Amino acid sequence: MGRPIVTIVGRPNVGKSTLFNRIAGKRISITDDTPGVTRDRIYAECEWLDKHFTLIDTGGIEPNTQDTIFAQMRIQAEIAIEMADVVLFMVDGKEGITASDAEVAQMLRKANKEIILVVNKMDRFVDKDNLYEFYNLGLGDPVPVSSTEALGIGDLLDEIISKFKDTMNVEEDDDRIKIAVIGKPNAGKSSLINRILGKERVIVSDIPGTTRDAIDTYFERDSRKYTLIDTAGIRKKSKVLEDVEKYSVLRAFTAVERADVCILVLDADKGITEQDIRIAGYSHENNKGLIIAVNKWDLIEKDNKTFKEFTDDIRQKFAYASYAPILTVSARTGQRVNKILDTVDEVYSFRNLRISTGVLNDILTEAVLMNQPATVKGKRLKIYYGTQVAVNPPKFIIFVNDKEIVHFSYERYLENKIRESFEYKGTPIIIEFRNRSEKN
Image 1 (tube, rainbow, N blue to C red):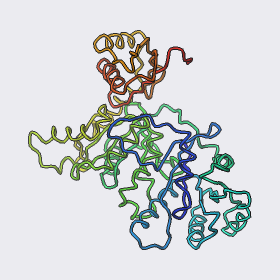
Image 2 (spheres, rainbow, N blue to C red):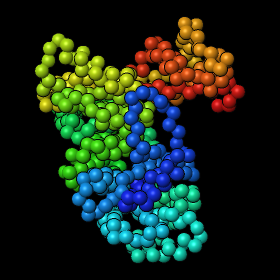
Image 3 (cartoon, rainbow, N blue to C red):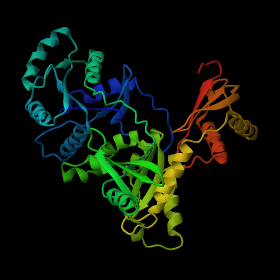
Image 4 (tube, one colour):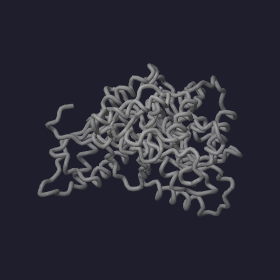
């Protein structure tokens, strides 16, 4: 269910990030230059031979270090290993096996994961004689690569996808609305989930949702079916992991990917942090529906300006997700929790809204008449026509004379004109420009 997760681990300076960039760099294209979307280059959506997977990079593992930074890197790697379906254990082919390599190998053997031993820096044919030493790690046949020279990458990718189980890369095509509850640790996600389920719903079943230990809860309301994906279920082994806010975004990966609508839980008592913005940014980049639930609202001292000031702050810091509705709730008292699922239904409805081609082109024609595109390098953008090609999320293709001269600000302008007619509450909309000569 959903994309497999592949994690790269190993001690520092063996070439993990170079391999990550080599695999990911030519297979993904980040085109969203919206201000405010923070990107940690620790994950990438990748594809090889029609197999899609999520690749995670990690800091180097130093098993016995007392250094605080290395300890945090080790915790990050442990979280990523716990989530992974396939682990790439990278070692340095020129340096040979070190004590740290042996300890990491021992840790991985206990993890009960699919392990691929990757021997990096095998730049020359004569270096392959060093390969045999690594059989001593007891992790099967080592795969030689050179990240810097791009040698052996295709063979490695073949090996990676051979480890995927048949149940991976299977789309969930049932009619349930899939909801991911995301946010930092201790923001009240679990309490909010329990309030939603315990007070108003009958739980049909609790079943393992993915290979990453998330828990899916199936329930119904007014004949509508839902799947609630609890990201808190992904972290289970050590309480110390729950306190490492810096890496909580790792736990949201799988849930966001599978969701139709994400509920970002903010802690009203602690305010908005960079990590909140980062987690919401992952939902936005994946074109998921988004609702911002401000929890612990009952703990805030209020006057007649409090709500406006708080929501204005949210709008400023989450400017890229101005479409997201904001709810102030309290999991402890139940305040306005009943509005959450109503809002989910509304957002889901907008995600599946389809505009006829005629109506869309009326909107575009009026938008152009009100605001002509600017001239770029002596050439003016001409918009011929547009059509909606998909829902959940809504996607529009607009045919133009030259897509290379479409300015970001004019794309945002057209999006706003579409939203003026059809709100598309809670959901990003995708606009793709094509030259009229391009085939569908």
